[in-house]
Structures are given as C-alpha cells and as structure tokens.
Image 1 (cartoon, rainbow, N blue to C red):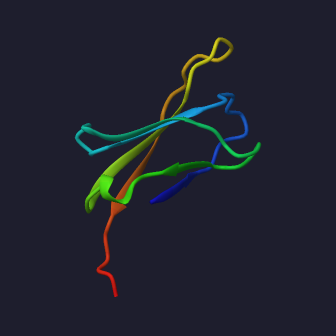
Image 2: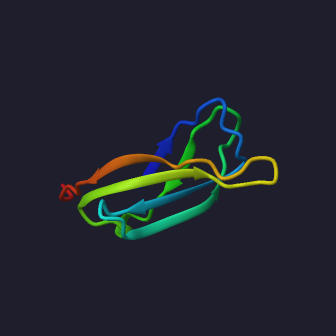
Length: 87
C-alpha cells in the first residue's frame, strides 16, 4: 500500500517518522527516516499489504528532531482499509 503525505513549505525536518495505530492507540506499524525525493515532494509511506487488515486507522507523520529543530507536533490522518476480492 502506498500513501503520499504532502508537506508544508515551512517544515524543516530532513526526515520523518510515520506510525499507523488503531483509533484506541495500539501501534501496528512504523517506518522511520522517511525523506521526500526532492524539495516540495510528498513523503511516500509504503506499508506492506498484509500489515493492516480491513478497518479504521490513524496515520501520524512527525518530523524527526535535529540539533537545529526540536521534534515538532505530529500530523494525524484517518485511514480506512477495505480490501476488494480479486476479480
């Protein structure tokens, strides 16, 4: 599964962490050290298809801290996974 998250122009982090949780907070999957391919490009999050069964989830994306910029607040997105039978 491929997810793309657009970045704001003022985000200073060089890399980002993505975490997928159930709405109650249980962490199911994490990817760290994500970076856009070029300035202005979205962060691409690639999740293995079998990592998430059908259901509701929350994706959090947060810039990793550096000496120049402390850890920022996480942005959260609601996700719904629905699998369709193969035709």
